[in-house]
Image (cartoon, rainbow, N blue to C red; front, side):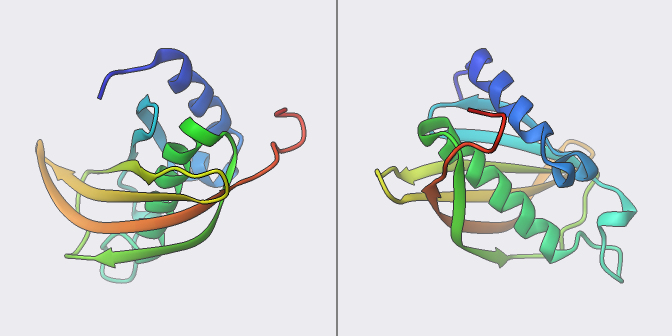
Length: 143
């Protein structure tokens, strides 16, 4: 992924406006037109009753990464549908979501994402997801 420092800075600033993203500790670490990589450290507050990463948080990571990938091409977007496939228990020191735009469009943007758990430098695919997004007006103060 060829880095785009200006795009990365804009996406990080926009992501930081979301309280949920800040609470989760989401960080967009790479960005280029049509794709992003974001990371999140493990915290017990993000787990479900057996200590695994909650499936809802997995969905949030996939949704956020897909939205950021779409935003690299379309600006602000809203998800109209997303689907998550939990492939195995999500256990790790941190989680990495890699999303890309599959098909950009004027009214709909199709994206896909792979979510990895990382422990001791080893990455394991734990979930995949697809998102359908639509362009949205910029939020107040972000025009």
